[in-house]
Image 1 (cartoon, helix red, strand yellow):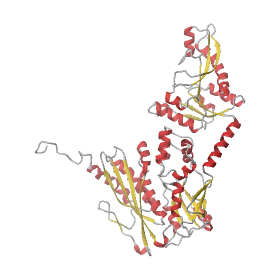
Image 2: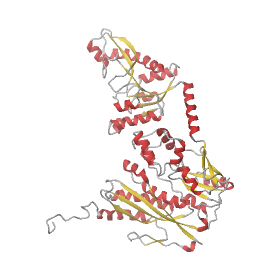
Image 3: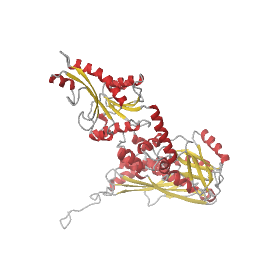
Image 4: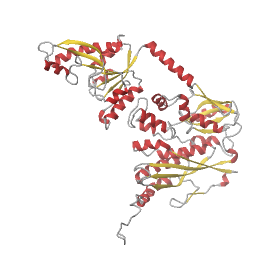
Length: 558
């Protein structure tokens, strides 16, 4: 207590833990030292990082600097609890920018601001920074970790990086002699890198209601892992191509780092006034994540090329005579490269062949015509058990009685026998136990149905009641078959209810699903007599035979 009788406060009371900060420094020291180059002077702990440039190596050295952050990709790290890739992103965004000026990255500093300091989290982030610096040949010579309680939520943070490189003055890029006929050589990206994540989050989590642990057909792992794939580091690949003293083996005239603004905003940054480029959009394989985002968000293709890297993280501009030689030499080193475009007359224009609104409209019309010609409706079937009604649908399709195709079969039971009735790529398990709530479980199913472009959802023994929000999401598209003559005996044990009430006629009903229990417009019904001595099992068997006929028949009429 103070002399005035009030409380004596400390910095820790205000939320800043200096001891934790000291522990964080100890945790990262070895990782930082592992990045040191011979030019590094001193060690961690000073008021500044020291780097002794060996000026004798250069005729007229120019220092090139860059600063960048990771943006809203950080939200994916917070959602997943994974922090080992973010540091790599911070380094890559900076060293790739410096590289695009023709410079060798020399040293890097990081800035990490946290709400509450967690030494292990800091170690994970800075470990990623150090790993990326080692891979880029860039020394991590210092940084700042700021604990800012009340400014960031607990567990959340921001990270930025600052890089300095060096180039000969006459080796700086871009050069001014870019001319029509020069070619663009694209180096593949590792995925989304660190741009466009505001749109990514809007599509995946706001619009599609997906979760980071969701497994999406077409991706190798959970969605969160795909989104957190770190930005590719290009110094190791590109620096040997730049040569020394401005003499480049391949005559490279410019380098484009495809970051925010995509192709349309980044390529003009290296072009003289009188030229533009024509990019061939079919010249390289576009990773699945870009195709999926375009489909999930109905994003126009020009918008995709303005927002994302579309699978090309860096572009080299060089004379056409050198293009094939560079591609072959990189291939011999196990590196892919693609001739993705050419320089043309124009005022820093960027034309991407094969995309644009006219082409989008044409593709949609072609797809609609194909679907009309085929007259096959895409079905998504939800099952929990044996799947005999699913088999009836498959048999009707095979016999030509039902012009449809089963796009996907989704089961909430990993061991459901129904899954064995279709090929592995058609069967998907969404285990209810893997989701903390019904909303996440249903969102996972809905995303799968939408991704497979399902036009009609068929409940074929799916032993779960769908929420109103799910039903509204597929309003007018969900078909169910129920073993009674609705509206009589809705819910479970319909045959038992029929026997207990002593009715003489039972049957089955195909109906559209609405937000009520076994409600919605009735599409078709078939009567089945209740015989003397009927048991629940015998009545169920006779009704099931009628279900096998009525369900595919009704789907066909729809």
